[in-house]
Image 1 (cartoon, rainbow, N blue to C red):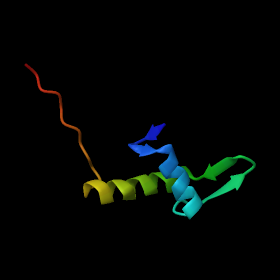
Image 2: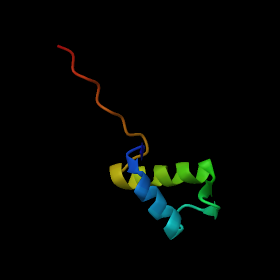
Image 3: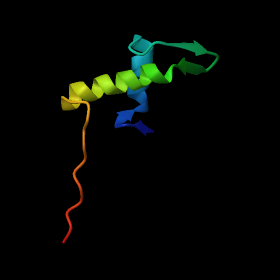
Image 4: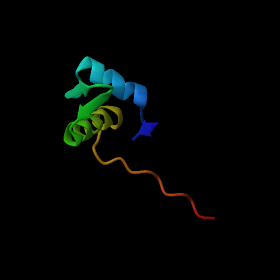
Amino acid sequence: MLLMGITEQTIYTWLHNGEIPAFHVANRWIIRKSQLRQKLRDTSIKTFGRTNVRHAEPMSR
C-alpha cells in the first residue's frame, strides 16, 4: 500500500517513533486524519520544497 508515495512501513515507523500522535487499541492504530495529513504535508515540503507539487501533463503528438 502506498499513500501519497509513502509506504505502509514508513507510516508504521512514524507511529512507533511518535512522529504521528496516535494510540494503539487491540491490533489497530487510532489516528486523527488531520494529524496524518499534516505529517504528509510536512514530508512533502521536505521532499519537494513546496506544498503544491504538480505533475507534468502528458505530451501530445
